[in-house]
Every structure is written in structure tokens, then in C-alpha cells.
Amino acid sequence: MIPGQFSYHAPATLPQAIALLGEHGYDAKILSGGQSLIPLMRFRLAQPAHLVDINRIDGLAYVREEDGALRIGALAREADLDAEPLVHERYPLLADAIAVIADPLVRNLATVCGNVAHADPANDHPAVMLAYRAEVVAEGPSGRRVIPIDDFFVDTFVTALEPNEVLVELRIPAPKPGSGGAYQKLERKVGDYAIAGVAAQIVVGADGLISEAGVALTNVGPMPIRASEAEESLTGRHPNEKTFADAARLASDAADPVTDLRGPADYKRAVTRTLTARALQRAAERALS
Ligand SMILES: Cc1cc2nc3c(=O)[nH]c(=O)nc-3n(C[C@H](O)[C@H](O)[C@H](O)COP(=O)(O)OP(=O)(O)OC[C@H]3O[C@@H](n4cnc5c(N)ncnc54)[C@H](O)[C@@H]3O)c2cc1C
Image 1 (cartoon, rainbow, N blue to C red):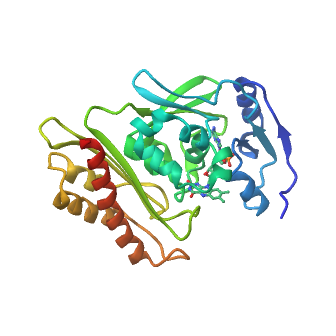
Image 2: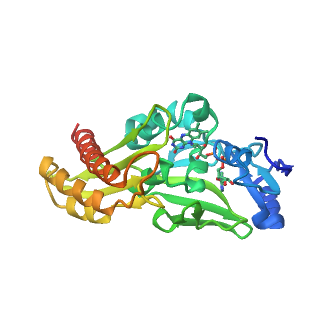
């Protein structure tokens, strides 16, 4: 199908984009990569009266490490991050996720910030950002504010962003010594959304014990899920099979999947358990290498 009618706006600056969003409120939608919004419009599941295309705004397509964080600008595409050696060397959890998102054509256009702003529980980056304990930088008419990722996802497709705010940057804390992360995803076929996905990020201290852990789940609930009890169970323990099996059981308890075309709920819980153990094992190998 073709989308319904809409007015198209192509602001050249962020203040212009924010002014347009303020003017049109909930009738407007930001267009970045278009890889989620355009399909929704074609199915008439979204019918915004105004599209505010931010692609002509300079200075938003960056990926750089600065002031203790990896900073991902609003127009950095999945492919831009994949081409960045820094991402592969220091942020392997992020690199793992990018490799299993959609296909190269989609990744050439899709933005990481758009993936998070869309707040689809089937998207992979929300869980990745939860595991990293990332921050979201939003810009609106009164300037910028920083939103901790735990406060960002409010409901399915709903975030803490106001209708006149643009998600301008994601900030992932730079890895501490002894850090390792991994993303594991089961999909029906290459390029599909997850049956279930697990993001894990740990820090192993000089004493050989896990000092910090982030574990988060993709597509096993109405929102991305932080597996808090799994995280707590990991802290202070040796990174071994028993530790990871215990955390994996707690992560599958935190999952809240529904039965659908991707499989029965019980199966998705079992997949979550297996993927959590695998993600933690891989994260530990990377932390200790
Ligand atoms: C065939 C196909 C397969 C896919 N498979 C996967 C997959 O396996 N895993 C996965 O995670 N994703 C997948 N996707 C989704 C893809 O990654 C999307 O691109 C992503 O979810 C949205 O990013 P975008 O830049 O394209 O955003 P858009 O489609 O332009 O926008 C999506 C939504 O976010 C809002 N938005 C976008 N940017 C901003 C911003 N800077 N500030 C505030 N709001 C903003 C828009 O208004 C809109 O509501 C797939 C898409 C396709 C077409």
C-alpha cells in the first residue's frame, strides 16, 4: 500500500526541527532512517499529518568516544557503526547486535537512535542500551536533557521523549578494565526480528569476581526488559558455568513473552535461558581475554 497524505518538512537545523515538532505536536513524526516509520505508514498503522525529516541537519552523523562515553549521534547509521573499528574493539556487545539487525540494505539507512526512539520491544538496541546502562540525550525548545535509559522506555512504542523533543545522542559508558559484553539472538531466518534476544555486559575485577553486570532481554515482553535479579545474582561471583546457569534461570523468569507466530511463550522462555547463559559465557571470554 502507499501511505496516506502528509506534509513533508526538511528542516536544515535542529532548532527548526524542534519548532516544527512544537507547532504540529502529536500530528508530527520525525523521519530518520525511515526503516520502521515508512513500513508502518505504508500499512496505514501510522498516519502522521506531518513528517519532519531530520536527514538534512548537519553534525548529527557522528560516532566518537569523548568524555568517558561512546557518543552516537542521531544520524549515525547502523552501517556507520559497523565500519568503525572502535565499536568492534571496545563495544563488542553493540557490534554483535548490529550484525544481526535486518540486512545490509536496511542497515545502510537505519539509525541506532531511531531504533531506540521507536521503542519497539522487538528491536535489538533497546536491550543493548539497558545492558550498557546508556544515557539518552534529548533536545527540545528549552535545551538538552539527559535521560537514564531505565527511565526512557515507558510502554510499547512509548518513550519519555516529549512530542517536541529529538533524540540527539546516545551515550554508552566507556568500558572499564575487565569489561566484556555479547549479544545473542535467535531468529527464524536471517534478517528477522528476534524470537528472543539477550544483551549481557559484565566487568570482572582484579580479584576474579564479577563486579558489575547488565542483562537485558529483547522481544519477550511488551517492553525491553532489564533482568535485575539475574544481574544481582552475578555480582560478587566467579564467572563460571554455575554462575551463568543461575543467572540464566532468573533471566528467563523475568521474561514475559506471548505465544505468537514466533513460537509458544514457554519456548521463548526456554530460549531466553539458553541465550542468557551463552551471552554471559561469551561476555566473560571477552572480559578475560
Ligand atoms: C526488513 C526490516 C527488518 C528489520 N529487522 C530489524 C531487526 O532485526 N532488529 C531491529 O532492531 N530492527 C529491525 N528493523 C528496524 C530498523 O532497525 C529500523 O530502522 C529502526 O527500528 C528505526 O530506525 P530508523 O532510523 O529507520 O527510524 P525511523 O523509521 O525513521 O523512525 C522510527 C520511529 O522513531 C522516531 N524517531 C526516529 N529518529 C528519532 C530521533 N532522532 N528522535 C526522536 N524520534 C525519532 C520516528 O518518529 C518514528 O516514530 C528492521 C526493519 C526492516 C525494514
